[in-house]
Image 1: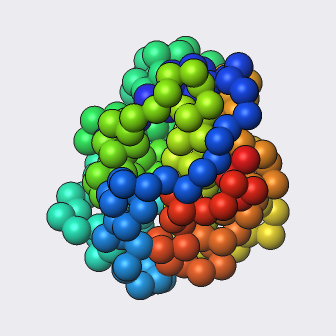
Image 2: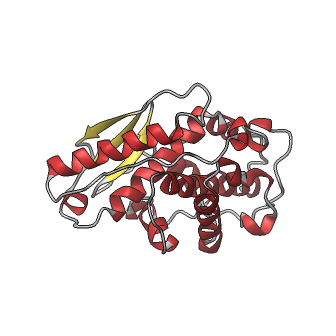
Length: 241
């Protein structure tokens, strides 16, 4: 359901400045049905992460279950998503080896690899953020946004691709904010959440653009609670740089 983001982002890593023009002629991106949905209903999600593998697995399953509940009324044709625990270090989306824990959408499930960094952590901050990021792929996949993005024409020089990639991943940041609000998560430091969305192996990728814009979009989704706040495809250049 989710684009192999790291692989695509690698193509634009050394690209020049993006054109950053609002997208036209792509209704699944600019006028998607998800934008017309009301704010997600709050879900009571009492997920508690212990410091054992069993308790962390239980925590992950609970968070994904809560996300299923939160989004099922907003996505037309929604299909519940399950969790698949894996041992393999190789990420499905990018093919990269990830040393620690990670979560990603792979085909029809949320793939999760648990390592000591999540299991032994007293805080669930990193695990929660990573699960939000994986869930972005569910939303963008089930709504047709992901396939529309992949099929967009571009000039292949890197500029169009960079602009489109920023819009796609910044939308994910915004959806993560919507999800966090629906699950009743109190966020005061958006930069901290953003830092945990992806494993450190992807830190060299700049597919989301400037950190200030990442904070802007995540905060926008969080404060409104509405998927419609996340239409990055019609946003002005300054907000997707």
